[in-house]
Length: 299
Ligand code: ADE
Image (cartoon, rainbow, N blue to C red; front, side, top):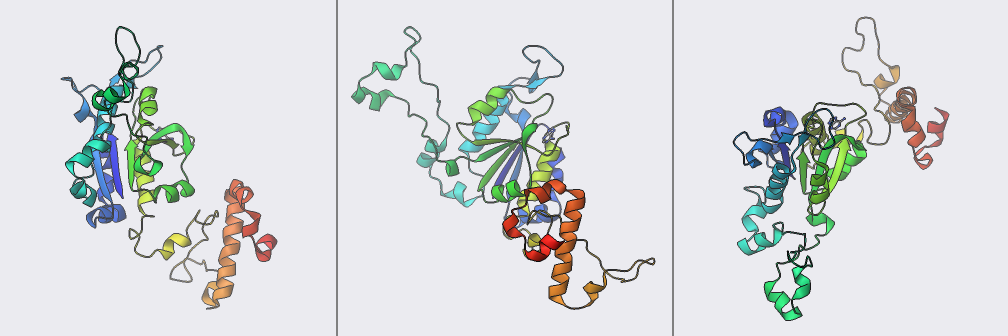
């Protein structure tokens, strides 16, 4: 999977060099690149923000650096990837972003396209932007407290994608027109980590890349550990214990020492249901009743 992250604080994402995600990058399972938004500015001060139209507190991220940064990601396959090596120069031109607003004659204000004959059109018209099918447009995730809430189901969905781009906003957010414009080239998804406000998107990206990256086949060594964890079946996970069996006067549930696998499985499922009902009753209400067996209902 290819992942691009655009931020004005690339150092924030250094944690993605560590642990499982860092190893997956080394192993080539994740091609993750962090880009500095300021590299796409053109002024001496590398300005990325300006005052909000309509007034109000704080600053808003300017649209043009974002457009430049995002265009660079659609046009270029990740360096060193098979895609980068295979795409020929002529093919690459086709995948670049063509202007989408019609070329307008300044005098008559009608699209130039309407003024030429069909035969001329073939020669003179700039190629219209092909409407890319969904799979050809990468997903652009814009972390925002105003987005849909990130959860395990979304992590699973994103883990099936070939290319994810994360746009880390700061200040009061990114000029809204960037998201509108980007929808022509990306499947844009504003996503929130939860109902609280962070200082920017970077921390949310760390969480989302870890949650998605670990679901990419091969990243977690033992895929069975993904099956029994919280949220994989809509429930919280059961409590776990390790040696010693008696620790500071506290024992463990007897059944875990019984060797009876069916009984242990039943005990763990009961614990999942009990814990979920106590801590997250909203998850119990969201369960599909079809997934519950008779013993579940008794718990
Ligand atoms: N940026 C600021 N707050 C956020 C949140 N709750 N989730 C994702 N991105 C954010």
